[in-house]
Length: 437
Image (cartoon, rainbow, N blue to C red):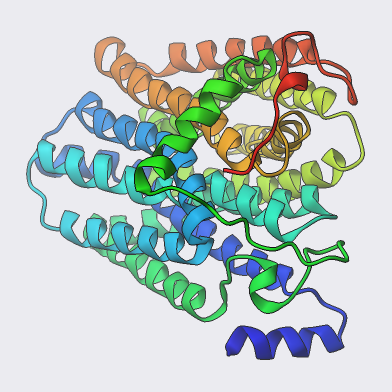
């Protein structure tokens, strides 16, 4: 009833309900992304309280990143079958239950179970695939802008909450900060219950920019068929050279962002004498610049060659990571790094989604992108564990940052191997026939 009444009220003002769904999705992704980023604040407190090493804690966080990515394709299939609303509510329930249980953990295996397995599965159901699903189902026009907004929420949530969480942890302990995260998740759950709807057809609307209502696709087969469908899509997509280019470059994207900066930046700054709250403030600054950078990327992806956008994004990110050690880790130097690096933290997402849609079809965009995003999280997991191991074994994080910077430069060149807009390379996705999943 709430959505129907609001749809009528918005229609009088010529506002499409898709923007309400996008707003609720934005908040949900913002809060769950903050949940993903929160453990980066807790590494040092956990080391002090339990005596765990950085590599032990990083192993749990790496598992979380891995599951976070691998859940994406199956989350897309579940959303296609059961609807976005049910899957988001299920995910939020898993995350809240896991975090509450983790308040009483005392052993490393519990950390792996709660923050590795539980948090990985729960947040994986509301990862980038959620944004891609909402953008493709609710928007026929302005899809790049919508995806830019939703992508920005992920990076912003991962970073903007960190100063507050750092202050709460410093003043009251990591458990109090975790309780704050749970309260925000409960708020998001209430808004999803009230306002989220699966498709425009549920409330008698066409997607934004379209004139005809798109009926819900009638799925056949049981749960076995449903869970197998992402694997069948992967089998088809793997025949495409385009898939491997997008998968590989997104692997490098995860290697150079969430797995490295989000997880280890605060501890890295601590090694050079910068307090956790100040380091978290630098991350928050990145989040603010990323918000505008990713929205701008969405706007640009509707208008320019997405290959060249990705070339510049990866190239500039690589240069910024190589520059980081030369900041001397002063607050001023790190602020310059935050502005430069933050502008394209997740700016790669809208062009990647647009290329996925162009080569693999609208109906399969969210599932194929889910597998591409799995590559992102494999990279994130590699960086999360690898950088932690580097610090444990070599007493420094810097080699991991140099490797990530060089990898970004490789990704910048790799993306140019894709065909020009309107064409598909030989043995690429031109022959891919997008069937509804």
